[in-house]
Amino acid sequence: MRSLTYATMFGMIAATGMRVSEAIAIRLHDVTDDGLIIAQTKFKKSRLLPLHTTTRRALDGYLATRLKAASQSDALFISHQGTPLAYPTVITVFLQIIRSIGLRGAPGSRGPRIHDLRHTFAVRSLERCAHDSQAVARHITALSTYLGHAHVTDTYWYLQSTPELMAHMSEAGETLHRGVTA
Image (cartoon, rainbow, N blue to C red; front, top):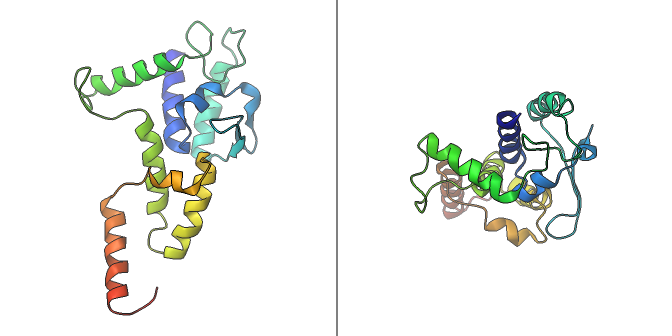
């Protein structure tokens, strides 16, 4: 149960961009046919996270095992003892895993953090529409809502340069320089 729980949780965070605290807080009744209900989050708002079919398939596989587990808790993600996961434990397990596969050195060294899964989700979703400035403008607003940000400017902090985004920015700059509007 433990390995399936963490594999599913980390996969869900990467596939949806949800916060770690949100994943820990999901209850069984928050899993709906339409997606995951993220209730009363950081800014006291609730939202629905639609799931890609592959993500839903993985979640359903986890649920088949989770629902058979002996637990008094209604938490979606539970420990091997059947209790809800604790934030420090989730962070510790994540760090143990990435250290064991060589993505991070000893304690105190720099390397991937679990929150980077959320950042990567945001960047990758924008890369998919980077060729169209109008699409980016619409998408950034939707992405901000999807991530549960109070303001669209909060989403900008998540963005970083990637080769794909830089190529699109370069093309847009060249087009602007030649006097052609996109």
